Image (cartoon, rainbow, N blue to C red):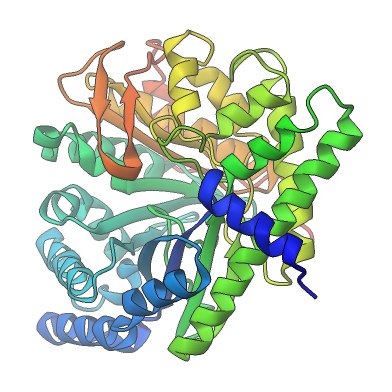
Length: 454
């Protein structure tokens, strides 16, 4: 039973501590839209998305009003478009037309982002996969709400280094295509190792082929709630610290579970998972970096940061899995730079570098996220950064990702404004020594020995 104290406590979390449901994401299978005729394929995609998600935004707003819990975003994820469009698309322009109809459908139903302009190439690329990847710069420059992701590796398959090299080039090209908006297209493009099929967060959401026809996934977030809880146990030992994070994560996840089940019931769509990630925003008091400081660091990036983040991530998961039987997606702590004011401050103070962020990704839920780098960074260097992050995910059997933005015309120390939830970011220095000979070898880095479990 829920008592009056818990109701009051949750209300306080919403009003004072930035507790929110970050997103309700409807996953939609487009496998039944596959058609060798491009016009027919596009028409089927549009009709399936609009008919499936026509009530999504209205339902989310109704639940938010009735329950008093902010639901910040309503989103859609779809089957990876490389699979859906493979039979019909013969050029990059063909794939870009599908991106256009995704954008049109997203605008029609009122969601802020639609994810799934994606390819899964962790072992190899089909001609359709490569065409889609080469179409990403054009697609993201011509759309507003489309997000793109590419899975480049996995613990079971290794790392597709041909695709890693290609994605370095495509990130550079996307930056150039959208240079008038400070290379904003790259903020909607992420590469993965071990990408989950049920992630509700953008830019990496897509609807996996093993999922139901439609599904509701919810992402909750509460960095401010966790920080406030830790303020009350300042100076206590690690046992008290861990228990506090775990109990707080439990409460936050219960809110997400309630919203997810209610959205599922009202929309008549099966409930999938709750992703209990601590996802920060640029708002003051909504920062993962501030939690690390409350744990005892002067700034995120100081010695001890990786240990503190590992502790935080583990306790968030332990609390969350007690609150819901269907925890999924990424679930843990995000460490984006531009979307977290505490991370931005740490970069500006010289406490946080790209190399330290990479070390932190070994123990957090995602990877190098929303990091602005100089516009003259080479494609090979970007591919090297991606390869390092893919290796961390592959060897540790976890999801890792890279979302870097080589901002055309900007250099180290300058600031880039992305706006909204994407925030702003100082341009960070990148190691200037070349890895071009490594990236150009081609082929595949084999799976680690511990992947052979059968």
